[in-house]
Amino acid sequence: MRSLLEAAGSLDRTWRPLVEGDRIIWPLLKGATAPEGTTGERIVVAQDAWAHAPPSIDPHRRMHDEMAGWLRMHHNDAASLHEALLSDLPQRWERLGDLVLLPSSAFGSSAWQERFASDEARPWACIATALKAARLGFQNVVASDTVRSSGATMLLGDHGEVEMLDHGVTFRFDATRQMFSSGNVTERHRMGDFDLRGETVVDAFSGIGYYTLPMLVRGGAEHVHACDINPEAAAWLLKGARSNGVDDRLTQHIGDNRDTLPKLKGAADRVLLGLLPSSEHAWEDAVRCLKPSGGWLHVHMNVEEERIEAWAEKTAAKLGGTVGHIERVKWYAPRIRHVVLDLHIS
Picture 1 (cartoon, rainbow, N blue to C red):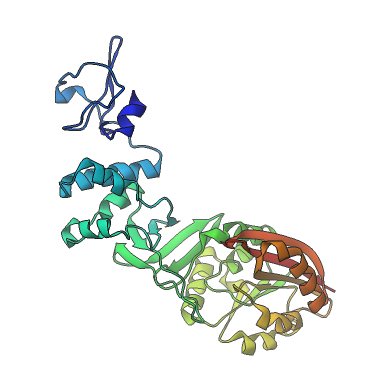
Picture 2 (picture 1 turned 180 degrees about the horizontal axis):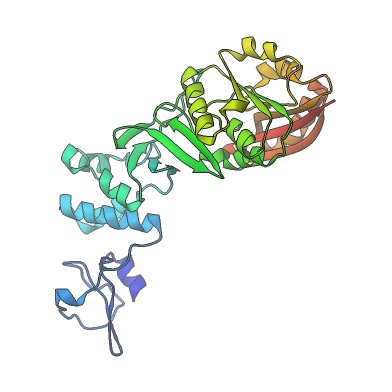
């Protein structure tokens, strides 16, 4: 019965069903009709007999219910149109502390835009409530500029500054200015899982510290040299390092790493090359950063799935090293993987 009522859009999920003896009484939305295939009498129940239903643990269901209520309150459309709109709700989003970023394509249809025409009737507070967020924004495509700026747009809340805890590491950044990829979470954790005690590390593309901070906080690196061309990202990395109490083991080199990496010749036990789609322009300088006794390179790259092993062997031969491990981080595009090659150079 519940399934039939939900499928017909007749069930009022605000209230718990009532149980009276051997009967279940389902709450229907105002004006709703009993769908075909259901049996039972329609009765009127006093308002004070109903108890509020607890919020769903499913955030998609909570968003559906909040937006269904918003549509009923602000737009007197046919029920079938409301159901079509509700079937077009976003199915994914990114949570950054108390800020949730919706995909840039969310609510992009002309039907949704018509209903957002009035600034006073925007549903952002409803969506934030459903997702248990204090602030809300839209993700935008990461820019192809040198600093890979994010350009996220705020919808609810007056700033995009974020402080978030991830696997024991505090990150700080401005989501409207810097990129933070939740899809790299497994690689952030993996870098923190290395035992780096006594090691000096060069992070050639440090950003806000996606890998620098886990290596310092969890990996226990003796020192990390963090190189980045973006002074804003570098400033946020320093704030993050201070929040984690590891800034005394961090040295920052701000500027083009074609200038900064050569100054670190012979300093490192390992070098991270975390730039996509390719960090190849920095490979030779990265090798020169290693100590005379050798060390590890962690080379990030976007590679066609069927070419990953061949690419790894070719890269190892080019740089004079041996393949230690290939980490498949995530799908970047159809048939294209973001991979990390752990390469040991003697």
